[in-house]
Structures are given as C-alpha cells and as structure tokens.
Length: 300
Image 1 (tube, rainbow, N blue to C red):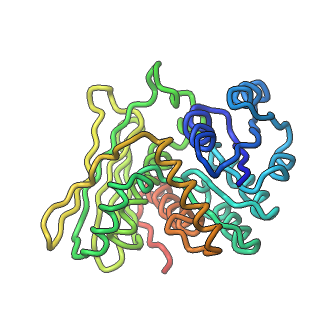
Image 2: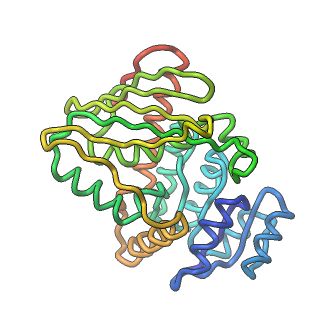
C-alpha cells in the first residue's frame, strides 16, 4: 500500500513517517509540507521524493497519513477521499463540526477506509481495558486529570501555533474522549469552565445518566505534571493502565487496522472518521459552554 505523508513536524517525522517506513506492508512514496525546506529534509531522511503540490502526492499514493493542524488536515482529507485515497488521520479530525462533516461525507461518498489516530486506542493494554470495561458496564462516573507541560524549551510541540491557540481542550481532549465514549456512552450534555492559564474543566453527562469530570492543561508547572483516569461503578474502581510502547509502535497498529479494513472491504472501524466527528462535536460543545458560561445539550 503506497502512503504519502502530509506534514513535516516532529509528529510527522517520528511517528507517521517512522512507522510507515518500518511497516512491512506500507510503501512510503513521498512527503508534502507547507515548508518546502522541511519537506525536503524529511523526504531525504526517508529516501523518498518531496512533493510541492498536495494533489500530486495524493495522485501518487493509495492512502494518506496526515500530521498537520486539524483545519489543514480536514481540507487535505476531503481532497484525498474524493480522489479515492484511504485515510489515516490524526486527532482531532477538524476544528469545527462543519469541517468534520465534510470529511465524513467525502469518505462515505467515495467508500474509502478511514482510521483516526487516538494514540492510546492503539496500545493493546489500553484497547483491552476499554473493551473489557465497556462490556462490563455499570459505570457511574469517571474522573480524569491530564496535566501536561509542553511549553518548555525542550518540548518538540511547544512552538505549535494551533496548540497555543486551541489549547488542551482540542489537543488532549480527543485522547480523553476516545476512552470515555466507548465506556460511558455518547455525551449528551457539556458544562465547561476555565481555570488559570490553559486549564479547562469539563463535566460531561453520558447516555444512561453516567457522568465524567475532566481537567486538562498543556501548560502545567513542570512540578505539577500529572495523569489520572479512574472509573467508578457497580464493579468497584478501575484505573486506565499506562500504555506500553511509544507512539510509533501504536501508529504501526493503526496502519495494520487500516489495511485490515481495506483487505476486508469493511468500513466500520471503531475509530473511523464518523467517530472522529463525534469527538469534534463534543469538543465544539465544550468550547461553546466555556465561552458562553452555559450548559450545552448535544443533539441525539
């Protein structure tokens, strides 16, 4: 399967391109980026051509792997799907529900396979926990804390303009929702409020009445970096296990799963663009809730 990588940053180089280059069934055929010099450098690293035109790389591949800001990703995903190319996308799918809808519609109309990369969902121990917890049911609530500190001199993500603009809600929030939704169910109501700096707090109501409380930041003091993900319910207390392995390993699993979808002719991957749209819908509702200081009900 011929893949083109769209993006030239740390994530594109160390996760997408690295995993594709190592995968026995993937052929990395080219790189496109908004910065031609960086695209050339990444392409040289992996021994492939750098493309200066988005559609030319789409034409040269069978599937696209996109590691770009979400608004840029959405446009490329629509163009790729319309051209019949399969989609291996990153989270969040888009920054608006309207853009997410465009991707979903393009994928549905062309019949391409799609996988959205929520990193933890592709680590076996995390995926196993989610499946077992969803099957067990009976959960009343979950408490989630994700405090990162990326705006430090040694962080490869600290200069990311879209992360600085949209913050932890849109960067960390998708990872959290990718675990909460399959276990607790669809979100029906969102309440949100801001804390100091980038800190945001969410109170989510799920189908059936379960709730979850989520606190996120990308700008925690280094001494306050923390992570907690705990479910409470009829069967007691369960904690989400830590992932074993790096993101490139997880991305390799995502490649496997996309190829399995293509081989089988199925279009029902649990993290396809439709699920990606569901996550964007919750994030957009949270954005409205925090800016308007009101609870937001999501449509059924």
